[in-house]
Image (cartoon, rainbow, N blue to C red; front, top):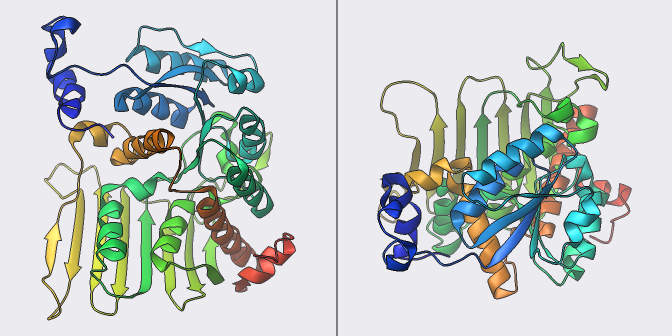
Length: 405
């Protein structure tokens, strides 16, 4: 993780132009070490380009090349790389070539959800370090297979559940799980209100068979966090949802869109903790909230982007202790340049953690098994919406041939 003057060389110097005033040989305060690692990006769409930008911005690695069958995505990736490096971006003809290049240390997989399993199978043969985007897979068997691959893999395999690194959730994790400020957590409630799914190449994210369904594709981030705060495995899931507003008339050569745009999900855990999640994807803003209730305190954290001209707080964290401990309100945030680099800074710290793990030879998470359980909850929620019945997790695992779990 960069420390001290290394951050100033990245942010202050780039923002105010001081790097151009002296030659590299004369730099001390704004000197930067050469990148230690070279990564290839597999899938150069919106998220692939964010990973290119953040890899270069974080500074300890650089992007060597990309593989993507879509020419426009490749051209956009070249433009993204050119903002940070004079070195040309290598373009590979096949996935196998991109994964096997001996000049590369790590692979960042950002392909459509339903292709993750095949991409990981090929990438793992290289023995290289792997960062694979969320959801790790679209089905429970595929997610479990990737977890097994990760367990046997010599390199680091990290899953892009980057919401763990958002400022509000980083602080919530610190207070609830490290400081134990709230005592024993009993309930976890989360909300996301936002706009509809964005356009993708081929519009694959408009179809559940390609995305895994909204509650897998979008909500695995939140289910991962709820699982993390519950500190237990899910036992039962009940969900209600519909396709109320978005894409009801959308149709292409793949057929008609079938993805949910709203849902309410309740999760019961083996240790008695209860979680809930509410989603609405037809709201003209981006709003997230988590409420943790323990036996001695309560925490609420939120993140808001409403596009209004007035000065409003983008993030807040409130901790209430009553007569037990001091209550307080804070505004968790990262430096502007980091927050602007992607996902309010979460992608930057996800990359910092990935490189730290490579340095240390061990990843502490989010692991492929963490990602597996987030998919399990998402699939259970999608199943519950479809059937109108609660879903027993043990039954769902048995149906996937995983009753040993």
